[in-house]
Length: 228
Ligand SMILES: NC(=O)c1ccc[n+]([C@@H]2O[C@H](COP(=O)([O-])OP(=O)(O)OC[C@H]3O[C@@H](n4cnc5c(N)ncnc54)[C@H](OP(=O)(O)O)[C@@H]3O)[C@@H](O)[C@H]2O)c1
Image (cartoon, rainbow, N blue to C red; front, side):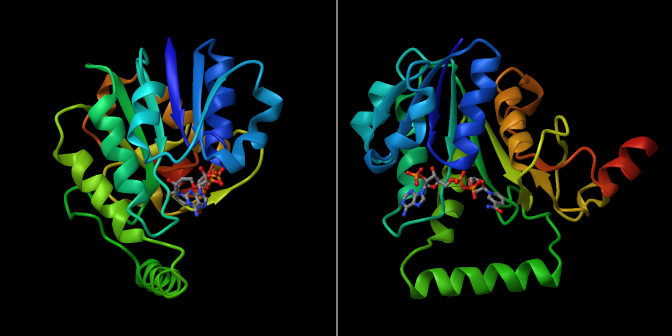
């Protein structure tokens, strides 16, 4: 299987590269030119395309022949970076390719998610500060996901909880809606977020779903998977 990872140089991206290589996939990575050296230790094992991930020509070349495309939707920057990246991936991916996108819990597919006041307050604060310093464009991640949800391609949008570093605990568990008790712990190891993204390529049950994930060893996951 040949897989393209858009945003390969970031923390999530590097974990995804490693999981793909562990599975024997051929990997193409896309990352900003200034970040290419972050992939130095992997450069003999993957093909790297450097440039902005919303550069349509770059994406067209990178996704050619790929059966899976894993895209990190980044909230950084204020030039429609997320939506431009998502659009390019959707426009140029091979017909039938599995398209997996990452985002946070703030994205809602059907409006049925229930958020705590703490989550909403943090989101508002982060959004306001980000806009003030012209660093963050959370609404563009929302726009990117809206376009994905409206498309009939083979997509999955993986919604990550708060993240931490550390050894893998195994494949996260997931639920359809924020507010579901299984998600209460709101914590996932970043390497396991990446594992879920990579595993989604071969999980057709996740097509047209926006799973919200949480670590499989967290208290809420243990409590509610045992009951299930
Ligand atoms: N952090 C969290 O707590 C959290 C929680 C839930 C979900 N998520 C989701 O997880 C995914 C990965 O996030 P992460 O926090 O783990 O970070 P990450 O993997 O380190 O990814 C950050 C990405 O953003 C790129 N980037 C950074 N600054 C940029 C800029 N100014 N313009 C364009 N691109 C820029 C980085 O590229 P370079 O390598 O070129 O710098 C990298 O690909 C995202 O989809 C995020 O929404 C994160």
